[in-house]
Image 1 (cartoon, helix red, strand yellow):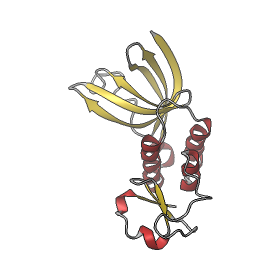
Image 2 (cartoon, rainbow, N blue to C red):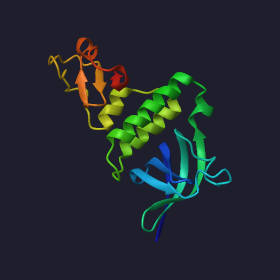
Image 3 (cartoon, one colour):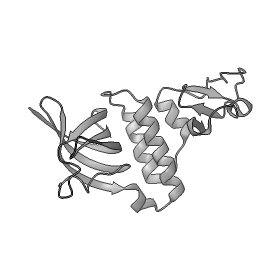
Image 4 (cartoon, one colour):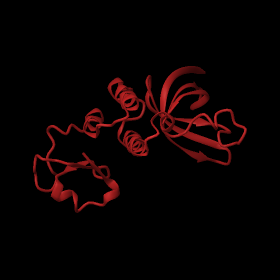
Length: 177
């Protein structure tokens, strides 16, 4: 059995069984990981009120047969600091992209610092985020017409598009740069 303490941002969570939670975390030391929280959905759980999506926290993880969340200390709740609904919505979009596009178990110091800097500044550069995730905008071209003036990224197909061609895509899967 091994214990690890690391800083993390909560990418999201889901219920499992009747009383458990599974958290998706992006950690400073281990990259994106999934950890179980037995009893995490119980009202009296010590972990239940401390972790929510977009929270920055210090977490203690125990590895035996799987990764289990043993303790957490929330450092900052994004909505408390910024109080800006637009920034919070953009941050949720960033976390969704990180959860979907970053490899599991592969730490990336650049991405970790990007997330921390975005939190401190209260602004997000989606072009820089895509660069950290391995989708460099500098050399991209539109998947449909070949134009070098890309203005959108499709999460579903993981392709770039120009202004004219992105209008053909479903809006909920398009990230406008």
